[in-house]
Image (cartoon, rainbow, N blue to C red; front, side, top):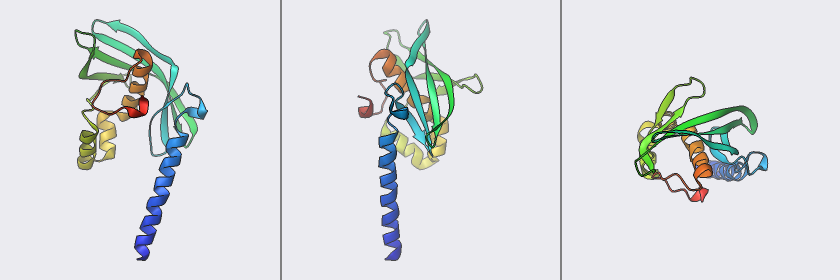
Length: 167
C-alpha cells in the first residue's frame, strides 16, 4: 500500500511539473517573437520569428532559414542560424520525405525522415527508445523547421502529425 501511495504521489508531481513547463515554455521570456519549438530534458529550442525567411530557390529546392535559440533550465546557452532544404514537387507543394537540414556544427546536410503519424512515432519509440527517435528523426531540427515554415508560408507544414498546437 505504501508503494502505491508513493507511486501515485510521484505521478502527480510529474504531471504538475509537465503542465507548469508547458505553460512557461510557450515563448522565450514571454516574447511572442520567440515561440517554443521543441524541448526535452531541461533543454528548449525557440525560433526567432522575424528571422524566418526563404534564402533562395534553386529549381525545385527551397532553402529556408531562421535563428534558433537553445536554453537549458531557462538560461540561453546557444544561438545559431539554422538552414533547411525543402524539395518541392512540380506543382510547388513539398515532397514528403525530401527535407534536409544543415548541421550547424559540422556544416553537413542531413536528411530528415518523414513524420508519418503520431502513432508511427509512438510505435517507433516503443521499439527503439526516445533517444534513438530524436537522433534518427532529427526532432531538434524538425520542430523548429515547422515553426519557420509556418512563419514563411502562413500555413502548417503538411506532414502526418496533428498541428492543433500551431493553429
